[in-house]
Image: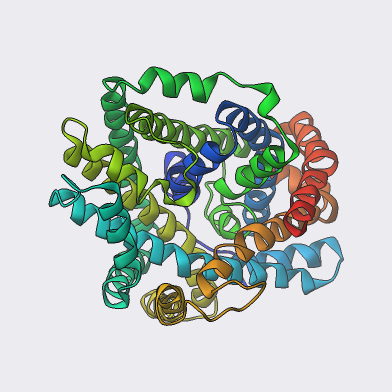
Length: 446
């Protein structure tokens, strides 16, 4: 297969696209509750360290494979494997990544549908005056209603695939250029509101004053796993973006910019969320329910609470929308590489993701008692196995391919960091990042 002719229109467009793929539920939903469950500042400190020594080097590896191959992930891996004189079976790593993204998107769409529901509820002021028990019961009733869940899931799939169908410049690039700056504006507005709350000082101290005694093996492993997940590495999605990367752009500089923007979203979201939580004297270690049960309770009694809660769920919806769009692109690229028109490819992928997503929808109602593996229902399965096993396996194989299999000259050109920068990157990947990924995998198994 020949090289792709598509390119991002500018260096800024590439950075916003990769940031859009990385920023999503991991930053605004998962980071706050993981931080709450793992000791606050101690977890944050470890998370930032592992972003630098684990996430960034492997993110560079994934993007440079796509940039060197200038094809979709499957064809890029096969082409580069042939160049290196090794088995072309490396291409199956691209298919493995596509399967990972597919299952992530199937539950991502369902959870993003929750944000649509909660945005509408908060705009209508339906959380005001409710007791905590009533808000919790309302969330349970929503989950048990497959019609409402399916409607929101369907709407989110349509929103996602309509943009992907429009192509790189007309769809992804245009929307990223619009929504990513808007996302940061909303975050800054929310943090400005958080400054006025009674819990702001407590939240800042809790987030930025590490208690080293709180660092346990579990906290370390959780921080490693989250650093890996939040940058969206390991699923070959960023490999597809590397294929569209402009010819003369420093990959390390671009990736560092993405990491800074990604961590910034998590920090700003954490400041906003925990300021509200501490203002109400609530427990930050509320787990996954922090977003959809605890926050509506916390906001409901604060001045202007319904307005700010609406802004928050709008922010969550925008983050998940940009992330889903950027994750869906590599799946569509597989079929466009095979000769299918982009619109038809987007419709096909959207339909398949929608169908599999229904299994997650019904996991809270008629399929709640149906277990698949280790006693998990389908929703629990797809929110566990792809994130805790498939992403680290994919990241490990990508790192091995980029740092050990690809010819050094090819990898160095794609990295575009000079001989010294290339040696530093390859040394980090070979002797730091790869062992850390193995630890992440072993911890998930354990």
